[in-house]
Length: 171
Image (tube, rainbow, N blue to C red):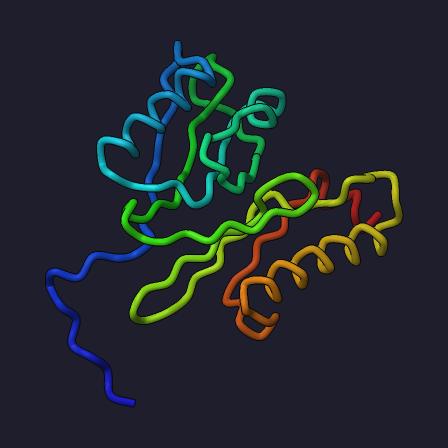
C-alpha cells in the first residue's frame, strides 16, 4: 500500500503527558495538579505510569477509573515521588473501560485509523503461588480483557512486564 499524506492539522488520538513531581509536593498534590491540568486541556486520562519510592507509588491513583502501573524509581529530590507519565486523549473521544478483579485494567479508544487498547495493573493476587500459576493468571486476565474489547493476542504490538525482582524470577 502507498503511504498516505499526513495532514498538518492531524492531532493524535492518544498523547503522552509527563508530570515531574516537585520536591515539596505530596502525592495528593501531584494528583490534584494532574487532574487540573487534564481538565484545563479538556483531556481524559487513559493510563498512568507512576514513578517513585515503593510505598508512595502503590497508593497513588488518578481518579477517573484509569489503569495504573507503579514503578519504583528514586526521585531526584527528597520527596516520595519522581512523577507520572499519563497517556491521554481529548475528552470528546469515547473511552471504553474494562474492569476485572475490582479495578480498571484496560481502556479502548478508537479513531479513523485504528483501535487502541491500553492495559495497566494486571497481576496476580497471590504472590506466593508458583511462577507458572502467576503467569497463567496474568495471561488469562489479558486474554479475557482482549476478548471483551474485540481483540486477540495477535493484535498486540507491544507488552511490558515488570517483575519485582527479575533475577529472583529466574533463580
